[in-house]
Image (cartoon, rainbow, N blue to C red):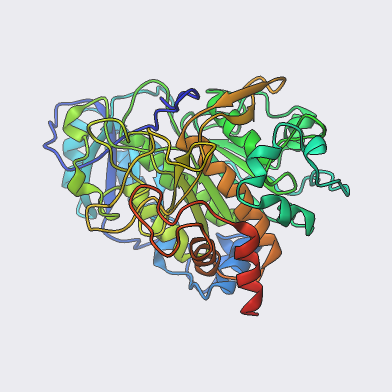
Length: 464
């Protein structure tokens, strides 16, 4: 992942179609035509979705469909018979990622149930995929003491909170309690410290999963994720408190620092699937994709239609199931590209631009509109000199980028979700847009402007 904290250059990856050479060895996405033979059915969703996930769907009137069913074991067996090595499975994309050489790719293309075989990355792995790790959510929540809502107590986190009237939500008792937040990034080292997430030890972190390495810990890798996380989750009185210190956080590593490949977008979708299945309410992804290591995969502006990128399509699927996906708009505003990245182009992605401390647009914040003319970003938040806990968990840093603006909004959305638990995801986002400071004249620089979460709460309560 290339999102550096000092002007975080939002990861820009892509994925238009391109000719494949069957002789090429690599990681391939193998798509299936259906789920014939799956061991599950939509009449018994509790066999593959958690109670929390089902409750969230019920609250949004979201039916369990064939898209949610696990893959056909018959098809998986046939794929393995080709000699390909299984790496990832995606029920929403109805396919798998495998490591395969040229002869195996030819065999995969000949399978009657396979609709497409597409190169997504060079071979990066030398071991088969283990079974998915089921996150353990039966762990204690962070301590939720009564706290003074004052600058001295919140320390360096106070400025992150007050610009969007988040201090009012906290004063009313809404600090994210009971809300499950997923965070997608390149790694989260050092977040087990007591004052980082509010847990006494690393083992108490509710759940974390590395989709890149396919193991059960995301508490390593890039420090970027830890710094992003701190703006929401840190609970260090008199030094730094985040925007949602009482929420619970599930951490996912989806970004691979070894190169930029379309496989990372598939990682993103798989992480969304896991987050959905365990009942995550809100996801923050300070990530973006427009260019890859292979230029033949690069996106063009016309691809920013919310339908081309698998990550963008994955957000639509997640939103239909009651989740909220907040993502950075991108840091290309001063570059020739200048536009938002995917998956911020998704109609259901809540894309966040960056502001200077005076409320003006940060020069690097990416512009809209999307290729099909929709306004982006959705809203904008502080993205310059954002106070955050440093990656080692023991100091302070000042960071720039839409990748820092995004989690500030995510944390306050968690507080708003706690405050109005019966509101749908669409109602919450509509209220935030409608009460932002340029709601009467949204544009493609700042979207609807800087949110006012106190006003959004009042609007929602007036309708109840």
